[in-house]
Length: 297
Image 1: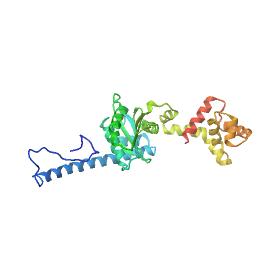
Image 2: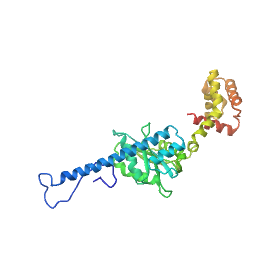
Image 3: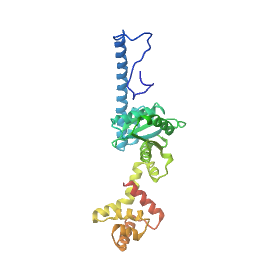
Image 4: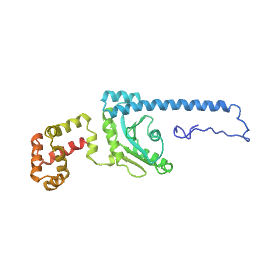
């Protein structure tokens, strides 16, 4: 039997009560019992392999920017209702010499305490993504904190960090939810840490909720003319703009950082304004450029 019900991480063992000392050989029927247990284990392992293969497909769709139709099909293949309320979870387990699949198994077990409907896949950067559907009254971050606390004694020198998105309804919102969870994961510090995006305040979370095509259009509309000018004239307008904003609009500090004369800097900024039709003395235009530059990273 498993270490505990539905526990996939522990090895299996068979225990039985006896009213006398164990015989020197195997009891009658023991071999058959062990064979039945091994068959059950093999069947469950095959289910896990199929579930992970389907989850990997959904993960690839998210990584390549698939559209809502493809995401809908991917979610359905994983047993997730496309119009459900999703929570994205990104987890990392570092500091241990363990196979990469261990983090997948850890997150699978943790999410099982939240909902029976979840898909878990490994991301290219070795972190693990989990997508779970749960009713609004379920405290997903709280359940994950309880799971992390339970695992803490066995981590040794390892570190488990988990980022959780805010609830998002429908598959079209999944890319934004994943971006939120990634940002929260990067903010998780400590040996075992669970951070929810709702605990953070950042323009990155705001941008994460904007559809990818809208983000690209916004970035290209503002920075496209500058990128094209830089390529055609071997100029440095995009970098100049970034440094100018980082310096809070200080001409002297920005010129010193770029190692150019203030007049040269003023000329570059005037070219930025001419090419984009924006006015960098306006706070609103500075904010737009700041966000566009962040989107280009």
